[in-house]
Structures are given as C-alpha cells and as structure tokens.
Length: 227
Image 1 (tube, rainbow, N blue to C red):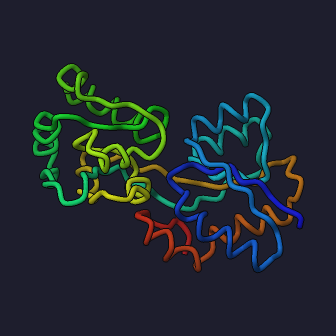
Image 2: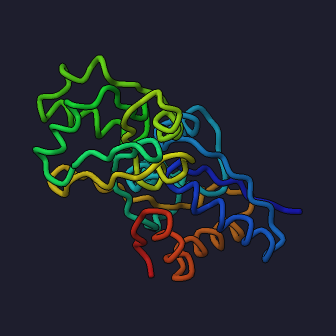
C-alpha cells in the first residue's frame, strides 16, 4: 500500500488519530504519523529528516516555506494554553490575572513542557509576571503530555495546550488562561516540496482543513480556522 508520512505536533495529535485512519481506509493510503513538539520536529528536519506533510505551528511552517522545504501554509486550528489537575482534585480559580497569579503561588508543584509552544510561553509568562523566582522550585519541566504528570499526582497543576491536556487520562481541565494572559497558537499544515506522494499528501491536508474536520477540532479543545 502506498503511503505518506506526517510530522505532527502533539497539540494536533488527537485530531490526526481520528482523521488518519479514516483517510487511510477511504483512499487505501497508509498514513505514518510521527508525533513530537514543533520545536523538536523542526530540529529533526534541520538534521535531514523529511516527510510528506508537516502539521506544526504556523511560524514553523513559514520557516519551512522560507527554506523552500514546504510549498504553502494551510491554517487548521487555534489552540489555547490551559491548566489541568488530577481528576477529582480541587480546581483553582484562574478567571482573572490576579487569581491566576495567586493560584500559581499557592500550587505545590507545576508541570510544563520543555520544548512545546505552551511550555516556552509559560516560562516567559511567569517571568513577565515576576513569578519566576518564586516558582523555580515548583517547576517540573518535561516534554510529552504533561497532564500525565498531574494525573499521577507528581504535579498539582499541569500547564499545556488544552488540546494536549485533554489527551491525558485521569485529569480534569481547569480551563484556559485568562484572556489577558492567553497565548493563541495557530497550527498549520504544509506539503513538503520533496514529498514522495504529493497527491496523497495534499489530499490529506485538504481533509484536515475541510468543514468535516471542523467539528472534530472543536471536540479536541481547539477552534477551527477553516469551516
């Protein structure tokens, strides 16, 4: 069976886990998915790895376009940073910037991603809020789905894209950050200029951007750009 390889950011994993099998079955095209943070995937591409499709941040796709490794950018979703706690644990009030600040100071431990867009943003956010020094001993910094760290009880709070937190079993979503502190990440797709199966690759991108995928994107904690 002919196939395509898709490099996909963790924030869109839940979407691809549903779209890819249906696409593969309907078109008789195998879809190999490689999941990692956008930063990590860009490092792999820089080191010489390639694929047929990239589903990563809009900024990363633009970078690949400048390098002539991708032809054009198709925006798929808007993703928001949020918090999660272990299932059944008390949810802190983060409805305003001041209450968010208080919740961070009150937390015993906070998990964030190391190279993901949300983790890098959160590191900068607590610096701007003057909290970095107060929180340095509380931070657990790892890559992957950091909601799992909260689910295990190792961290009291987990900070990540809401769509990624939803991928962890055993957590409750507290909610997105207050609007004044929020960072919106646009996830986009692009076909590699050296794609081995460009027709199938473009069809897969079209499927992700279709109105039929919009409801799925919403269910996975994001807002669709298309549809």
